Figure (tube, rainbow, N blue to C red):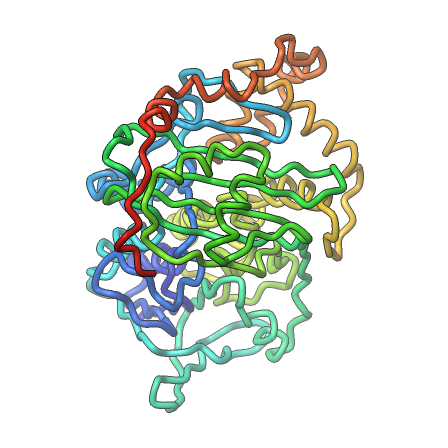
Amino acid sequence: MSEAVVIGGGLAGLLAARVLSRHADKVTVIEGDTYPDGPLQRRGLPQGRQNHMLMAGGAEALDQLLPGTVARLTAAGAHTLRMGQDMLTLSSEGWFRSFEDESYTVACSRPLIDHVVRSQVLGTTNLTVLESTKAVGLTGDAGKVTGVCVERADRSEGVVTADLVVDASGNRSKASEWLAALGLPTVKEEFVDAGLAYAGREFEAPAEAAKDFPGVLIQAVPGTGRPGKGAAFMPQEDGRWIVSLIGTHGGQPPTADEGFMEFARDVRDPVVADIISTARPLTQVRGSRGLANRRRHFHKLPVPDGFLALGDAVMVLSPNYATGMSMAAFGALALRTRLKTHGLEPGLSRKVQDDVAKAGEGSWKMASTTDLFFPGVKTNITVRGAAMQQSMGSRYSRTAAANEDVLRAVYEVSTLRSPQSRMMSLPLLAAVLRGPGKPPLTPEQAKAQFPQIGELLASGMKPDLSDVDL
């Protein structure tokens, strides 16, 4: 009987487990946390209270793995925001113009996404979840991993044997140490840490707000010598809004109530602060730290049969780039593709690990190169030609603010529908070299593209805070 074990029951782990359930007789998921009964926060998802964006490429991959998932999210209140029509965006080089475009993001709470995925995966007949169980090591040797050592809630220990072990335990993965204990070389790890921090809060949308109220992105600007500051505002399910304020080293947002609005007004444009001044807060301000970009080169190891790593265990980018959930789906798709042709045979791990590394390469280059230009950055990498890449990226963004074709390519790449090579076509490069060709939008012109914002602010709505007790 063939058996597979997945370490970690988050999004990456459950998607991998569902894929494996079609090829292994038995699949066991080892999860240190316990699952809630519904779309609720849980201890094992520390970023769950912050803003999440499921990019179009990831949403489409998720639907390939679990058909109908995006429709389920929509039915539960998720918003599909088209980047060109439903998002007010202040890029590093200016306000983007509104236009009809197919790139999008799905905006809803992370607990809702996880709940919808769990509800489809956990009913699989040959899948078992060991909750409140901790993985503490691997069994086998440098050539073949044969199982996982576990510690249960009652402190008892045991071994779960497997033909394939998938590490989907997230950015705190101990797999590098465990593999070294089996005689393998140390896994090379790269990091770029700009000291990014988040402060997030949920609000009750006022009744006067339009149902098609847009999202808002205020991007942080690298390369100025000053800390990067930004904000993201997104509609959520159940008539809620979520706001995440971001700041890099030296400019991190406060988590105190009195400092939250002040920081929101101090970013490059106060539009997010203006919007949420009309809304009633539903939660405390919650902060997140330790959001560095990290990449582990499992694919450069002599990968042992019976083991592979997926999701944040391989690469985690700061939430500012909104890639984590999509990369989890891409990794599960890579596993599914290889299983169809290769099965649980020797050599599977090597092939999948290579595929996962390739899938994340473009996102890593974009995030790491950008974050290198914030002050106080800590890193162990050197990017050849980083200054030239950053200059070209700025020119691209500046042109995108006035050129619809260039902006369309930016959206396709940023929502992970197209590879970065999409932006390197000769016509687009020629347009970028020519430059914008139009004057930049003023803040007033940019906001006027979304009359919903003006209508809400003109109403003079102020939230009733008399019964707010957070």
